[in-house]
Amino acid sequence: MTTLIDRSTTPSVSEESRYWQAVLTRDRSFDGFFVYGVSSTMIYCRPICPSRRPQRAKAAFFSGPEAAELEGYRPCRRCRPDQGSPDQPQIEMVLKACRYIQHLQEETPRLAQLAVQMNVSPGHLQRVFKRLIGVTPRQYADACRRDRFRVRLKEGGNVTAALYEAGYGSSSRLYEHSSAHLGMTPASYGRGGRGARIAYTLVDSPMGRLLVAATNRGVCAVKLGDRDSELEADLRAEYPAAELYSDPANLKEWVETLLGYLRGELPDLGLPLDIRATAFQRLVWEHLRSIPYGQTRTYQEVAEALGRPKANRAVARACATNPVSLVVPCHRVVRKDGGLGGYRWGLNRKELLLAKEQALASPPQARAKVMK
Image (cartoon, rainbow, N blue to C red; front, side):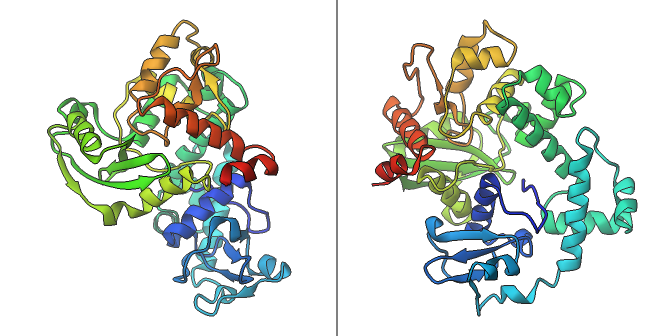
């Protein structure tokens, strides 16, 4: 889910991570929302430019051509970012609609209400919004509400207060929306994934071999290990009745995103998920995704934040059963005495992940040491 910003503003760190992901995938829905410059060539491009993608450290993001040119960058001759997008009027309308939705905070506007504000028909607004953003206005409003929920958690609030402040009328509403967001039905999962087609691939990563698996709705497994055979066996044990097939090409973008995260280029992973979870697991996993990059929480702190101070063991079980490592960062939960606790993919990997995140979140001198 992408949160859009006014073109006159400077992208924040979290927005930059989404912009970089858009560059990696050449996401057309971002065309017209920003341009990126390459410091080694002093050329700026559209996110959909077919030219070779730069190293993350050499990429800078700007709200538009004017901002890039003020910094001395020249327009790319291949993608012509200075000539504007043919969809610009519609992009401006969608930006206005996004700002309106964000301004309402606790209320989800009806499509007809939103269309009146944009001075267009509901059907036209729905079609253009879905084409440019990839989701409907209601889905965008739901995503904004989920983002507010995570922000409240990051600010230190407990789950109950956070869900009401984010605009959920009750915890059941959060569960319903999280269930729709996370995907796989309990019945399908309970039958070992019967009826599901799951694509997977295996690649080398800074943490050993990486397995990524997904349905047509989103990522359903992210596993780390030493041997392909063991990782494939683990996937088959989890989904014994599903149709599993190797498909490196169609999973390439999500794999590149995960590898970028492991290289320290992306602090957040906003990948779509298709996983099964109980209500408690869902709360735990949502909370884990709110732990800031480079920080940790104890099992007890997570339990207390959920309003269940005696549920630290249940929290540990939820961490141990997390099917999408990295996307749900269960490695950021440690024991109260400072010990690492458990980690399904090996304590050595947990230690390395934490050390790298903490170093990259530290001052430049520390970052330089960890990147050597």
